Length: 215
Image (tube, rainbow, N blue to C red):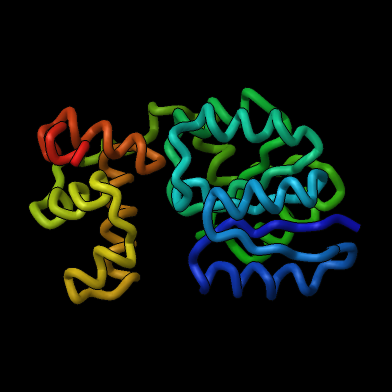
């Protein structure tokens, strides 16, 4: 029996994952973590747990910080569970350590269940989509349109200035889901995986200037 940590701040994702885990034998206590601080606290208490994490929703400064966290807790098994991870990120994280498995949020229920069962028994799992991506490489990837709309530029600026998705949604009188969709589209277009990388792009592109950033 293994303890589990669900590191995700989307209620619908957490509810769905809890439901799927409830049907698997051998699942121990489940802890939820909505941010990096809560994740680290949970890891200190459950240093041999399975962590199911959407890396793109947490404020990691970069892939190196995730790798350091993995090294700090070497007995933890990591399942990356996201709907948008870049090929470069996947290559670095999966080729650099056997501790990481990956399944995408748009995978079938059967494939997600297989991933959960594999990692429960200390076996690695890489979903078909990611496996094909890594095998075929960039040769078969459609070139992404990096042109951001005016709305996306405005939202990117707010993200770079440290505002949360909920804060941006409230200020714009839009739903959390709408802003989160914009955020995902921005990250996809820029081929970045976290706020730190998006902020660096915003500063290089002049969307945010240093004076605003350090206020």
